[in-house]
Length: 208
Image 1: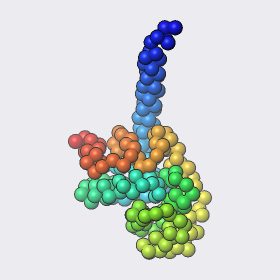
Image 2 (image 1 turned 90 degrees about the horizontal axis):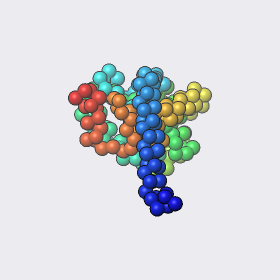
Image 3 (image 1 turned 90 degrees about the vertical axis):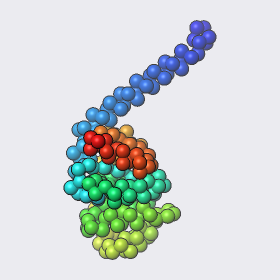
Image 4 (image 1 turned 45 degrees about the vertical axis):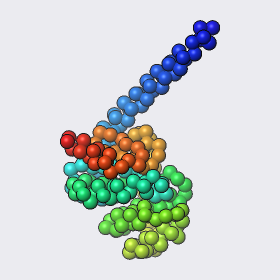
């Protein structure tokens, strides 16, 4: 009877439970970020762009078919051009269907075959419009100078399955459920953040 007359008590209890759960989840994310940082930033199977010797590392989880990833892409490019001291790690995280997986496999195969062509390939895929088909992905690869037959063979490497599976495990450990998501310093930042936010996060990571 008391609860019927004072339903706000239930809402307050639910809110407190939710807040406690979220606080615990964030605590787990912080712990996982500390324990996984080496793998996040220095796994040789993950492509690297920007300045490989940069004093701040940004890790991005992304999907080539994600419209929000495409929206934030120009801001990322501007950041890397204006700040020459950022090391950028690409975590292929294909969550939007089979063609996303094909694109991720092709990109990782490109990294394995010709690391100098990974960033141009990544850029071309991010700038592409419309749904990605395997034919379209391979046409893009050919346009930037990759050997399509060698690429197709490399895409079948079972090692790529392990890389994608591990990227998904890392995402779960950091409570990343969508794309894009960035790891910058001590923070995990979801969503298509703007250039100003990215710049501020980099400054914080440097201790500025």
